[in-house]
Image 1: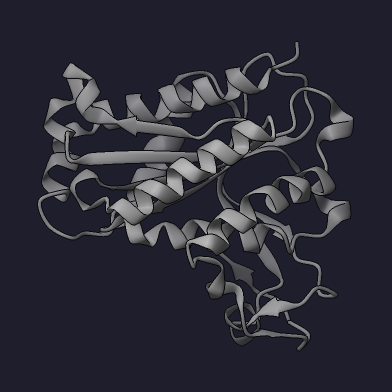
Image 2 (image 1 turned 90 degrees about the horizontal axis):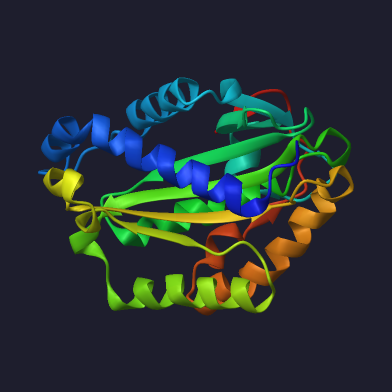
Length: 242
């Protein structure tokens, strides 16, 4: 059975909402002060995927980096040769093939959306021959009250550009819209998605790179791409990049 782009996005958005709903007391407490709860939420999200019959759910899935590509200073300094995604899964009844990948970032400010771009840069260094993904979803959670006009414009510009190029739209979840989630009304979620659809021939690194070329100018316009500067050709040795 083929799974369409909209089904993947709808399913993952529903999982995020269910995870927040089941943990609303904990999140209400965590949001009172600057805290780091990304790894905890990652486990809760994976658990909710299993509850909703997702298949082959893995945490911290490793993929080998291409040592021939230029590397960021951070990757070189820390000797990374593999990149791992926070979690991967397949949807129930989907044709067995490549994975749906999720990178999760939690910030105490919307400014930390730059960490999402770092994840995208990391994934671009994966070896083409080892490309394991049919869909990649970058989830960014942050306090709703910390959203500045600059980052409102960035997210709106990303959504507009993706729509123009007929890619999967961004998902912007304001939990104030859901009466059952009133206790976590201070939380906001932004999901940026690349999805190849149901055709195996489209589930390639090159298709992901085409998507990257669409979003990169938008991040650059808002001064986000500077984090990828200062690259090195130094060969890397085994370890893993998160």
